[in-house]
Length: 323
Image (cartoon, rainbow, N blue to C red; front, side, top):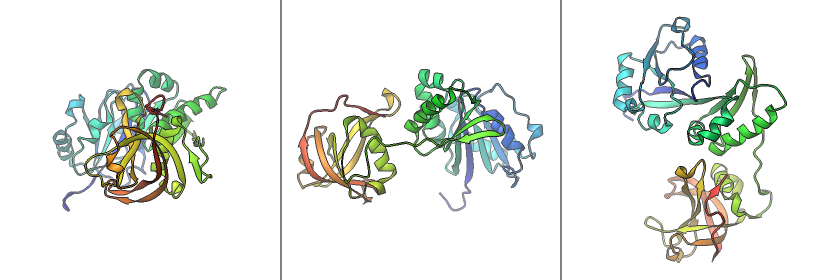
């Protein structure tokens, strides 16, 4: 980024229509804490909500509201034009629940930096929305730093709802905080643990076929916990350009949300100088230890698998891993 280009912080609030985004933004704009610096704020409204904003109640006069009618209007040029029109120093976005988040992130002007992303969910309708519009629901959860379930009710069904909601959020995002709101001053943080299906206190661990997705996510999130431990895992070998003779990629296809998002989830392996002679896509059972180290393949530190033994094997059933 050029030195003279000033960062523009972006606060992104997502969720389906009626999920509470507008109410939260109204409260934020009325509050002294959020507006103490009196920054000129561009407020982008990407949908017409059921609740109206009341600008007269905002803490200061430096909030400039613009409406984005269509997803195709999310272009770097148009967004930058709106920012310059009001000489704004920060951006707040009430995002359309039916638009893909990638449309916004891929079209943010260069100087725009995502400072915070929050997703709001109506607890009364969340499970139904997830069942009927799972891909759109996943899209709103995958990068949120905080997920707020509002309109919760303290009854005999809440514990079951919390377990289901927690699992859905964790499949999309392991790092987001989860909040349950029962009223304006009645809020609790999610405190459910995410136990792994295998015992990491052991030095030698066999990863069952249906544990691969959980194992892959956790070894990437917390590679230091896996350092030096020995694993036996079934997966596919991938070879190709950019890899040395003693390297190949080991992994499986993983479905996080739905068929459209199936991706190959693999890790770099160090083996013998015969690694590149493996058939691309062949199924193998591998025994290896894990080291967390820098490699040009990742362009950062990450888990590298040091293979001890490798043997052909039958494909897993099913072949695609899920959470």
